[in-house]
Length: 391
Ligand code: ACO
Image (cartoon, rainbow, N blue to C red; front, side, top):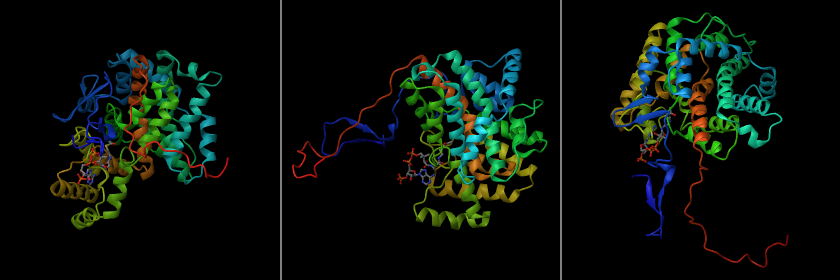
């Protein structure tokens, strides 16, 4: 493949797969990404069908358990989720220690660290790794706690007081309520719910693989999620939805897209929200999220943003033949809903924590330490000079 190479000067040395491109690192029963048919299945179900019919809570359950919940299971799960929604005092105190200009991904990473330390207090590192039953409970509590963390971050930046969760609302509606303190509109709730489902899981992407590497050392679930958040923060991965919005703001309007693209490509800039390591003919999740964005453009009466979106997409596809990924429609969708731009990647965390924790439990069940090899290209063996400064 384009990413594999021989080591310079070592013609019969091992083949190096930079970026592990094309490497099949393990098996998984959680999701299937098929780049040929542009399809994504969670536990066998097409993601676009789940997004059109299911609440995000049911998809979280599906990822963890392998089957959709029965009505009773969903009710019980939702009751537990509601119980663990309020922002905990220790988490709030830790976030308040951070500068108000801190990136919200740093707030979310810190919050998970605090929750992890609390849950593993008094345990040895090996005991903290725990078993599947304990980790399932931890996953549910973390899933339930994250919206309040994300909402608190945005409100803190805006100088607003936190809003208590509402037991009469499902996960997505409550997320919007605690962020904006406005009765959530069903059209917006539906678009948000779809985005959460589309972001939930995507096999061995960089953050999920990071979580599996950490889990493979028998570290605990929260440590693995902290590492996954750190990997997701980068603009080549989750940080792209945030960068998309900055790009759209920089271009300003549809009529400026073509000239902007010519300059950006001449300067060899990467256009965020386009391209994918796995999908080379289009990201399977984009049509569903683009349809949700279209409803939001209409709901908020922002045809200008819709036109800018289309102009950048068609301009880039015709120039480079590289298609949008999920971050391209989700960035402007979150913007229209009222989230501030740095909050976009934390929203991705709130969704992907379901996939991460499913993979953490799968890794634990079939564990083998993840430890690849490297090909050395530094200096040959040599003597330490005798004249070096003495110790
Ligand atoms: N803008 C400009 N050129 C691009 C882009 C882009 N967004 N994506 C790929 N290319 C070009 C590369 O420059 C490269 O060109 P070259 O062969 O002339 O050097 C060629 O296409 C192949 O790209 P690679 O970077 O080798 O592909 P890879 O599989 O390593 O990268 C990646 C995938 C990292 C996602 C890349 O497409 C990218 O940087 N995109 C922008 C960031 C982004 O949107 N990330 C979100 C990923 S999806 C998600 O997290 C939901």
